[in-house]
Image 1 (spheres, rainbow, N blue to C red):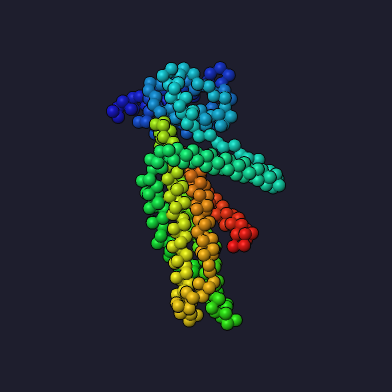
Image 2: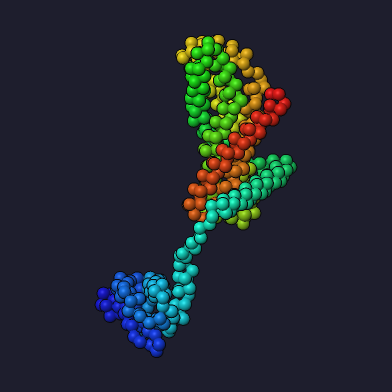
Length: 382
C-alpha cells in the first residue's frame, strides 16, 4: 500500500503555456495523499506570476472528495491572488464532484455599509414593525385553526385528545406547584416585612394586612405566576415544537394528514389555560401564608387578628380579579410560545434565539394585558 502511494503520489508542475502558465496536476489526489498534496500547494500563487493560469488535470489517476476540495482550494487561492484560472482536461466523472463542492463552499457574507444613525434607527423600527405584523398574523392563524378544531370537537369529542391535555396539565401545573408556591411565599413575606417596616413608624401596623392582601390577590400573585409559567412552560413549548421542526417531525405530521394545531398546539393551550388559574390560586394562598408568618413574627400580629383584618380588607371581587386574568394570560403565553416554536429553522442557534424571544415577548405581553385589565376593572369600579 505504501509503495503504491509513493508511486502514484500527487505532483504539481508549473510550465509556460502561451501567454500564461499551466499547472499540471498528476497522480492520485485522495485522502491517503492529502498531506503530500497540501505540501505541494504551499507557495503556488507566488510561482504563478502571470495573470492567466490553466490547471491541467489530464494526468490525474484518481480523485476523491478530499482531493477535489484541495484542487478547489488551489483554484480559490490563485483567484484570490488576482489570477484568471481555467480548468482543462477534467474527466467527465469528476464534474459532479466539483459541482457538489461548489454548492457547499461557504460564502463570505457581504459587508454592510455603515449608515447614519438616524437612518439605521428608522430601518430597525421598520423591521420590528414588520416582525410584529407577521407575529400577529401567525397568532390569528393559530386562533382560526383552534376555532375550527374546537368546532369539530363539538361533534366528535375524541378530537380533544384528553390524554394529551392531561399530560400537558401534569407538566405545566402539577410540576410547577413547588416552585410557584415557594416564590409566592417569599414574595408575600417580603411585602409584609417591607410594608411593616415603614407603616409601624406611623402606628399603622395592622394595615400591612390590607396592603399584602390586596396587592397579592389583585396584582402580584397573578403577574408573578404568569412570569414563572412563561419562563418555565412557555420556553418548554417553544423548545419542544422547535426541536420537532428541526427533526422534520412536523412535516411528517402534515404528510400523514394530521393537523399540527389539533395534535400539538391545542392540548398545550388548553392545559395551560386550565393550569394558570390553579397556580394563581395556590400562589395567593402561599403569599398570604408568608405574609401572615412575617406579621406574626415581625409585627406581633397573631394569626387570628391577621385573618380578621384580611376578611375586612378583601371581598369576593378582590379574590376573583387575579383568577379572572389568569386564563387570558395563559392564552397569550401559549400562543407566543407556539408561534416562536413554529418559526425555528434547522439550527441550534435558531432554537435558542426563538426560545429566548418566546419568554421575552410573553412576559412583555403579560404585563401589557395586566395593565389593560387594571384599566378595565377601574372603569367598572372593581
